[in-house]
Image 1 (cartoon, rainbow, N blue to C red):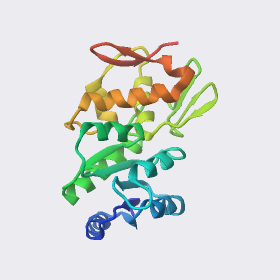
Image 2: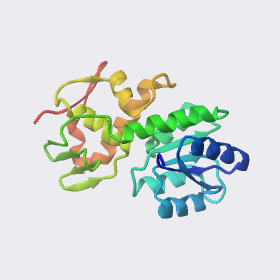
Image 3: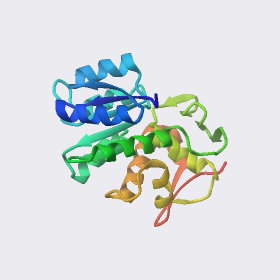
Length: 224
């Protein structure tokens, strides 16, 4: 099997179609029809990815994402009928790795699943660990720490820091960073990177100063 995908979707037909397409591609699937069951299956099945609808009974998708992200960097693709940019930015704040807006093709969802899993597997080749002052990025363990304190970074956020860690002090453009954290061609491309950086600065606390903005260009990680 290529991995286990937890499908969280309250429309039975849609969940069934997604499960069929994913199984044909070699994935195992688990299906939850409400947020409470989604959290139960996330804990028991330890999926490699979550396809998460926003509008759910019991506990909504945003709250499910909050609870999962508090303890795990498992990739999350949000399934939403709301295409407003604000929804996307709110979702990014909760650690979504990608979005698919309804109506969508199941083939598109499978392609997105594969793309996000490839990125989560670490298509980068920087040093296995990097330190900038009190900030440490451990790529082998997908872990970020600040002064020894664990930082609850998402998989996309770790990859962004890792990409910057390849060459400390070198500015990377938003377009370059999009290849790491998101799918090129999405709406609000630059804002996707900006949202990840904003979230990281909030999470990094006293280490936030290591992540520097170069206005009109992009971002860099401070040299030590």
